[in-house]
View 1 (cartoon, helix red, strand yellow):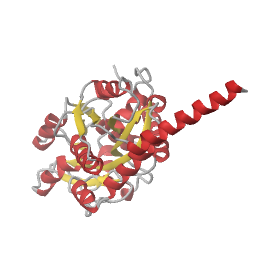
View 2 (cartoon, helix red, strand yellow):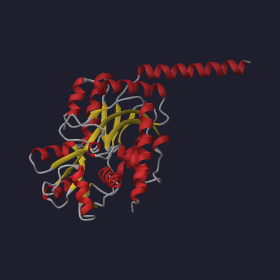
View 3 (cartoon, rainbow, N blue to C red):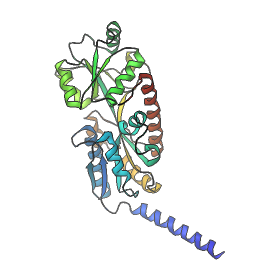
View 4 (cartoon, one colour):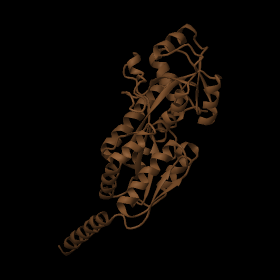
Length: 322
């Protein structure tokens, strides 16, 4: 009986300490690891969120860029850190859903090794074409591609990239044959597209809207389920007749899987609050990003759905990375 009582006291003390830790969290600076270089869309959104969390907690959230290996380097850095809430991952759909579908032998399992906190934003992608291509709608592109199978190309930032997979999804749903031309990054792909060396490409709004405004590119559709406030005159791919089509990029906040649930709950609450502030919404919307915060459970479900959807696209297109 004495042992049982002592064990009970130990459990109560541990629970009390955990509760107190969550109540006081954070008591020191935090790290937010972003697995992309500084200056890009992911970095922009991650730093905006880090700034708001720093202001709310009166503790600095230090952004640490760890690019490389398709996100593996950054994610592994998070997984090697203590699961105490002081190291966070600001990850992308490319690394959290697409990469696991493409590369089953990753050195970690995103569904068991990471704890979802919240979806941060959704980034609608715009399908753009060079003005020399005689198309103004997705239907025009589909008709042209069917009349010239294998003669129209499109660019991406590399094999297995979200831009590549977004176009493969369109190809499979439309039943057309477009030739993939991969590049080593956004800059060379955009240079070739503007020069007319490639005909089409899915890309982020900050990358293409200035070129659409000057007439160097033509925006024919957005990949999201609804039109974007940043480009309200551009219809969705679904409106063009490919019902159910949705291709967006997204960013989310996560932590190591063993992070205490009450700490996750506290980070989630403050992150949702930050992402919902009117000033933050306006700041992100100026870059075409749509804040989409929610619960950890919603993010976990969303990640799994995205993973399963990409697996279907990969199987249909028979995509295999060398």
